Length: 377
Picture (cartoon, rainbow, N blue to C red):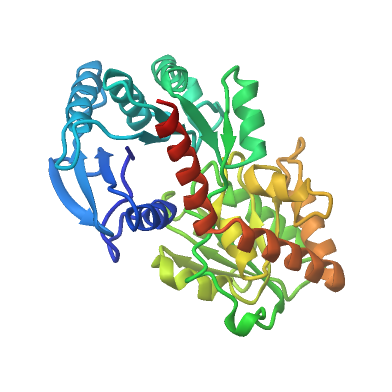
């Protein structure tokens, strides 16, 4: 059960890690995906040999939620191969996760719930996260309570969920597909020592505003510093106006929404991948950059926090502090750029970790969980 992101390859609505996971699981298992709200009208299609069925949501009213749960429960109990699946897996502790766990209970089958975002978070100044709405909080907590097994992608996210009084049973990183995120000829590309890259939609929680202020500070020490911003603009040109106001036009290249297969070419060869997010459950972009030998410097969230906490760190994490983190991020960027040997070692450790925890590792890990639950039911 997913909220969407399952267009066939080449489509515009794709969550890459879901594609990677479905492709691998469907190679050896019968996989049926129920997309909750992917389209406004019912429909079905195939994705890597897996059947996808879309269940429209509507206005997310109580009536809509009840209808979605009924339709999902009926779909889980049907299907061409079996009247009951071996396991039901819901992604995000939102309506897909709630529907998945209720359907699994009604069909007496085990369920996995993967908390993959800000379902329990609440950042009131930017109105981000499910924790700010009593209804959404109840939905998430109910789904977590009903699930047989609850997973997250990072230790940082586990601490976040535990801090909200909920449980986590497994940590499964969501890794990069090394067919796309691969080092040519077994070695990293030549590095541009003053080029930074950031991958992510322009929005409040990813806080590219802070990143641009950090760049403004950092360029005073390194006037040749440049930043590639890759991702959909959801803020109606707000960052373009900030770039102009700060005089960063010669330092920033905005690429907008880029086909996923084209993103590796923009990350490859950068000196640093930079994260400025206020909340991240497990940013796959960190592991994708790492798979190219490009280390990450960023705020202490998700994989940035986890890799920075390793005995031999594979990322640099900063705390936001009272000023929002711009000064700390700028200082960390400059320190990393000026320590070439240290940055190279950081990139090698990020490469090793990311290649070990790739998309194949993700699929195998979930397959182990699914098999264990199937045996135990």
